Length: 625
Image (cartoon, rainbow, N blue to C red; front, side, top):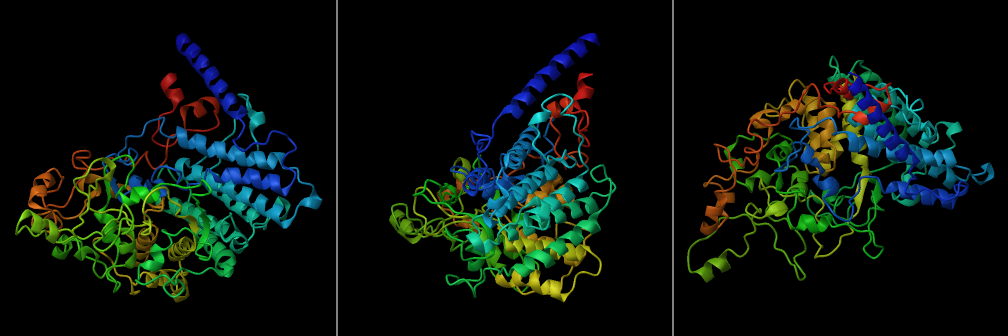
């Protein structure tokens, strides 16, 4: 026992040293002089540096477009370890450090802010609002991953002692309330905060703004309300304040979002829109969203300015996951309605035909998933590409005749190598710039969109008794469906919907979120807050791809020579592509009693005895002692 205590003491000394070293680090954006943050220009330069941590495409990688390998929207050979119950005690360390490091950098701004009162212009007050927004954003980042957390409402560098680090975690509902309070400060509703964000119109959505703060507040309140409702009675939710938070969503919508005068991008307002899916698609494949008010907060790229990414290049190559072979799931494809508002029957024989899967469907399916007629890149230039065209291969005639007759066939890349291979037959269409030829890309990325606010409002109204009515429908779900070319019909129970026990209305709202927000980084949070990760368990839950039976058009679109290669594609007994059968023979093994939250890092538990490990995770003290 004595030996164990000595080891623990030495270990804690090492950890304290490491923590002290972390707290001594300067943020990347830290000015050299203490009196630097004294005017608008200095404040703006500092805040600009904090923008770099927001989730936008970097120079390399899929970023948010491929992020949903952590959900049922993307199936990847390098599957998500959390979904399969493979997380360990160290799995939360990176997220914990990222969240608190960014909070430290924001609080550094407040701590060293020294602008004289006579220089506190509207521009300065808006920059302070941006700082409050960012502090709210990073607290929410931690809340969704860890639940109860210490609220970092001040600059903690002076706490770099063992005694100073004893900071208790606040319960999750209080963390959510703190976040909402910071957002109220950001928009000018707390005078002593000396902050007031400009509206979107001031900078055409290129800076954090008042409308973005409202949408973030609605996102936070909806998340916490649904978490507390659907995890009620478990170790993950010790109280139920869901009605309070759902009402907060409506308050922010009524008082802030709707009065802002934002509009959806529709065929009527989009001069370039021709097909029903175009107005939606254009929210993801343009370089400039300044005139589209639905793009509430977005990032602009410029190759000439040295700010670019390669997402267009990866999408043009058919990549879904930059780490290896992957594909969009059949479950995602099945989610989209028919254009007449009816839901599909996935067991219908016609859906064995790859092309028929897309006929007469929600326009967002066409905008999201590659199908016959859609392009991977421009049809011009040195790397010209033909559009996807899945049709039966004509194997009659000479070699030259066959080559000529089948020259227009472009199939999903089922037999390619590495990350360019689709394991489901479904490639990403969302975000493809059909004018792209080659080189670096400058397609913009939207971080906050008006449509999300509408979905938050609709869901909260449906969750609260007596709040849903035609007025709510007409300003939320109905315009979203109409934009996609889908007729609104009175909801009915869908026997094939993945979630059970819901009213038909909530079923359709959840369907709408998946259709509208797919491949934008929302799906995991939705599964977690609804307590629906259990639907991914089992062989059915691991997902499927397109039909690859010999009687199907997808199989027939390959030449007889390629049929031998197709034998390596994994399919189930009914010939639907089943790419994870060897990796997850029993389906995902998500631990329902543990994996809804990440483990708090062991070094934090060693240093701060006021916080406790999350449910299902054994604490480091138990192991060492």
